[in-house]
Amino acid sequence: MSTIATPMKLYCSLFGHKYEISKKVTSHVKEYTCTCCKRQLTINGNGNLVELTPKFKEINAVLGEIYSRRRLKLNKKTFEGELYLGNAV
Ligand SMILES: [Zn+2]
Image 1 (tube, helix red, strand yellow):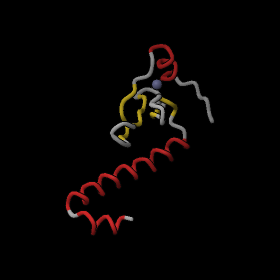
Image 2 (cartoon, rainbow, N blue to C red):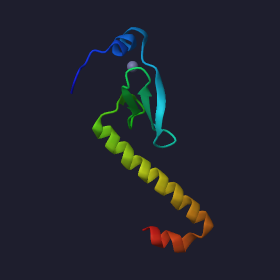
Image 3 (cartoon, rainbow, N blue to C red):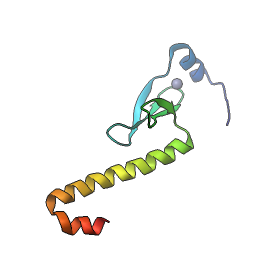
Image 4 (cartoon, helix red, strand yellow):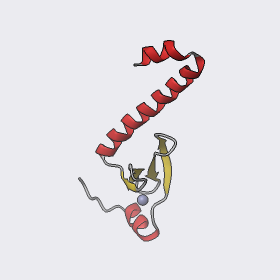
């Protein structure tokens, strides 16, 4: 962990971070990056904004995978139920 005091960080601590969505994990979970200091946040299981640590990155990666897989499964289900459901399990 390095704590380099950049002018941008000073700006953020004075005026607040400017977060923008950097990644959409699921419809509820997103990752945010500060355009100034590149600090990253995400939403945890309780719906709170937390620092995007490597641990949370991992969790989000898994979440995103499950999310997209579930959506895929849902599409297939509506297309042709039993056959695809059997393949997915
Ligand atoms: Zn910032």
